[in-house]
Image (cartoon, rainbow, N blue to C red):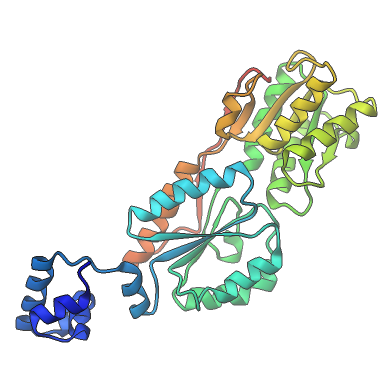
Length: 335
């Protein structure tokens, strides 16, 4: 492998001069610059972007902090954000928060030492903005932008790229009510989750438009977050209590699949006895039977928005505080 030392020897200069030509060519004399560039071309030298970034004080890596790496939506999001960043010469570092606020705080505090190019926070958990604001402001002032993906934090001055979860759920519940699938239960009101709050708000809005009061017996908390096990447990418990319900709006596809399994295990028919709609649009939803209806996100579009924001930052342009990506109601066999 050709190194900067090889280029320096061929051009008759020091390795430091080679670095100056590659990073700040205007400060090097034309003759020296020409010799170095000729040596680079002759040897086929490829600069190491990470090493360059470290010498400049910042790397080329953007940290993606995800709330729960085991959730399917985060794997799809990671894939598309990685591709989008690589298209503009940036790398992705992935960190799992595991729903831990102390881990989020610690990663933000370590960002400068990691020489990050930027940070993307993709978490459904409520973020303690008041507590973290001084740290975030210090990062931004130091040239490390912080962007929120999936959660609206623009009121705190943090650029945000997100779906409108409230509108998405509201539309799905409208469909269930219009299809005579009431009463509609809501599975996954997680009070410590910003996404859970927004999605439950959509459920409540749809009921209000239809003149239906919220029945707390049809609002099921999820102690195990958005996982399959929680959906199975909550649906099983409701059925054992004799709750009468014709459809379920679940706050995630994983919850929906667990709920569907619980219904089928009790010889209920989906959708004839109970219709079910999930949230997220994960790929396997089309391949289970019955195929899962869902409110589908668009991780590719989220990635493109993130790419656009970082490209603008690299170019020194202003960026918008709010970017929206549309959700799509995908109707399949389960509803």
